[in-house]
Image (cartoon, rainbow, N blue to C red; front, side, top):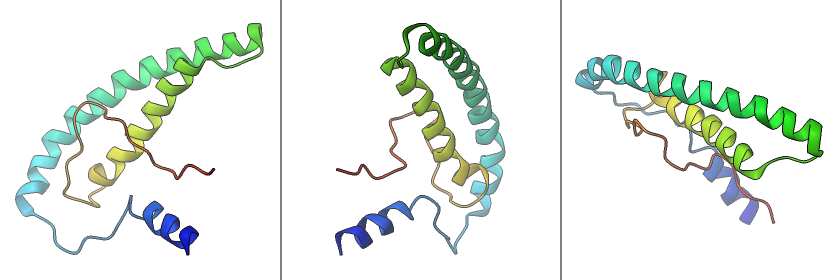
Length: 107
């Protein structure tokens, strides 16, 4: 029963919404451009972190937690924004990244 509850929580990221706002459709155009710019800058920085992480692993044989968390944050924000950009929801995500979990932690 607990596992079914966790699975239903996982499926709530991309949910079908019947009603859609016409005004929101036009706002989405401008808002999506702003989000795309933020994602682009965030992606460049995450790419640099990925390159640095590669060298850290090569030299030290372990990962840097801060670099991993930054890259993970970029991926989570990207997934969080996808529902809005692809017209699945009218709920606008924040322009700047906020902590988001897209998975269930297993004990």
